[in-house]
Length: 285
Image (cartoon, rainbow, N blue to C red):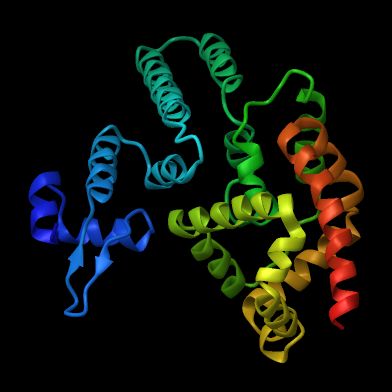
């Protein structure tokens, strides 16, 4: 069916359909004259997208649902339900404050609510701004889980460790760069990259063969004058030195592995993948 027909059936705008197509959710057949022929499957996907968006489900969560092997709609909806429940609790807290309830009572309610927050939500609140984004945004796929009772101690130590670090100095231009890179769109992109990394370590050898040209180009770029003179290159250089000077890998990573089970599993696979990657570099050099 043509775009006009699919617009009528879904009540979506042309721009919305183009957006979902750019996201890879739709696979219309493109004819020589430039027209797109949408399948029944495309229509079904758009109907699902339309309903889920009206329920307030984010595009990133919809994409996860549609791209997952088991089409885990239940997990997406549970996440949305959890978000709505938290919003309702926040609303109740605001009403308590408006009514002039005592601070101790409000604090107790907040403590109960915090227990249900994800690790990432806790960290984002504890470290707003560029510092937090630089240090744990890349861990988001692993930090979307709630904090277990067993991990509470390690989590508190991690927060204390970060909080007691010396100020990480960035120029005004560099701070602006990080803030812009932390927009919702770019944070989604970063999360997507992190999720892709999780997937690829399951079969590193195959991934390296398929992406041999890209790996070589990336390695060349990382050592190029262009990268080293770029803002991101300078930030990365500063960050690496800052982490090394503060023993981040020796102190923080073991703590993260203790309070995030999914990161611990990822880290084990990462060690294996890194070993394979080093062998691959030896062979190709």
